[in-house]
Length: 222
Image (cartoon, rainbow, N blue to C red):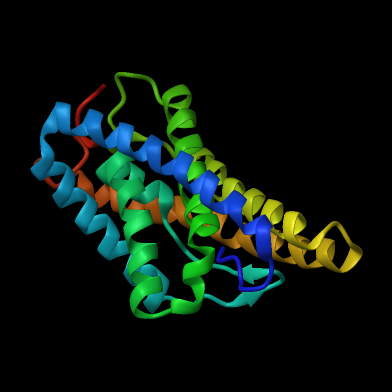
């Protein structure tokens, strides 16, 4: 899902910083709400774990190049279910930043576009969760259909944003369409795999106690 160097050049890259600023302000708002509800220590702990998971996923798992970008197993829905919206958003943004600073400095100029690609679909996932999951249902009791819908929402958002950045930077041409289509098709494997991972993680979470390191909704109804 990384936007490669050279895809969006010059003045066009300013849009990436603008969208990232909007996503950042939304994350700050969600973080503020989380601090009011559970305190800063819980938010920091959950965000730190999420960032470590994101960095590990980016660096340790295979990420083959397909079409216009690389296919990553990001587990956005897993992070959301286990840690909550604000920690997942902070973890995604922080993990991506640390990767750029330590391992892939050539990606830093595209950070605004890449962080937008990660965060805005997460916000859409949160919106979908409020409509798909009844208030009295803890996350550990979700069905395969529900976690599939959450995963599909997130991954479809990533593919859509990558496609937007590529068309915005390169124009709509046949070769570009083919590359974007190949990238989108490759993400079907992620959409199929992520719900199974979510269900496995949620099954393990049933034996865990809700504490400052986990999302309250994991075991308790809203």
